[in-house]
Image (cartoon, rainbow, N blue to C red; front, side, top):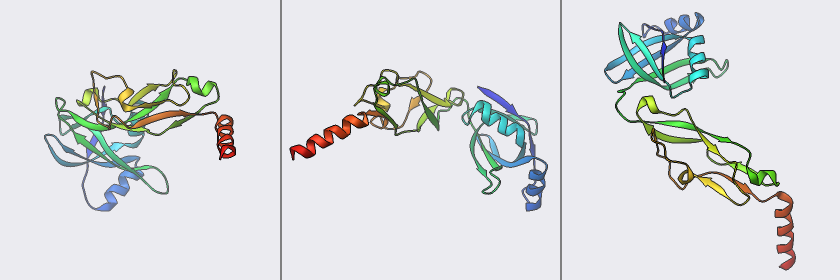
Length: 196
């Protein structure tokens, strides 16, 4: 999904320019990549935060600079250590026909069958690397854990194959697992100790 964000070009120096922009509620940034030289810009702080909240990090963001529209991805942003406000953002201009790699969040959905009988759910992987054309990049990958039983796990290899994107992360990586109910595990440990 593509969304638009209003940008303004800005001077790179002096530093006071960046401070003035932040005081006005704008975030200094930079755009580089496909068909654009590194260009200093600024974006409205509230609009950028709304975009992050509603569209996520992997949305294609249309930026119009000097009358030319560029399809971009949010490459990275930094936050101020003390205020936690976003202090700088970097956009990467992309070719919409070219495959790119990004991180996507793993979200577990449902209540595992093993948890219902007292098992303990552990999530070991929270993000995966995916590759796709920019318009097909997922923000998140949902993993249904409803049928997950005690002693079982879900790995990358267990995820359904998508027509839109490819998961690059190693197939043997474990996403989550259900361990034995604590009382039962302690009981088995006691029995083992007694047997020894």
